[in-house]
Image (cartoon, rainbow, N blue to C red):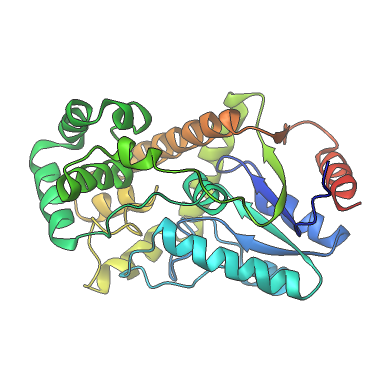
Length: 313
């Protein structure tokens, strides 16, 4: 058996509100690790409270790569993330340290490690038209359309997963071929890093749901709606941008537009966050080779640190 000489990296994954950032910082205190964010909302400047972005004091003590790198008016893709993340990992490795990639965006982790299929570039005109159709027909109807055209993709994409649903329909229109067929493609090249995968997976879903509700109420108290008002007042942002479609922001945007009252807004945002957590957990359970840790069981930091220590040798 040949020796694996690839440089080392660590993935720390988990559903929203599971405590990933806190654990990442604890591990960074114990080992020569530099943090890289893997979060599709944290890339955007101005998405702070509602995205649970680490505060200024935390970022000063524990700098994260790939936070606040894009204006919310400019969409950011998984392909761009892969390029940026690999560059960030190279910078960390060049300093003799180990990159710790922390976040909950499974698509980004998957794109980074497995690569991306040869798919067409996003077409703004097609996206605008699909979004207009969705406003008229509703996203469940758009999901039914995808199910007729690409059942395999529809089985993986929920009717509320607007960004992926829109992309799947866009690819079909641009290529005339199902997204699932294009994604099968050829085998990806070997990932150039040897990875330890850690994931926080709460054993009690009810406890996670309570934490999600508590955290959202804390965001409201901290001024989340004022944050979204400031984004709305810019005038160049709209509901179809990926930044504004982020969980919590989409519901706040609708509320500030007069479409829901305060109680309905809160309920919808918490429900959407729970649905996001459910999708994240489903993906983590299917990800081969991941070490799972219950964040609510005592001794989390010690158990995770033992796994990291063994991996680093």
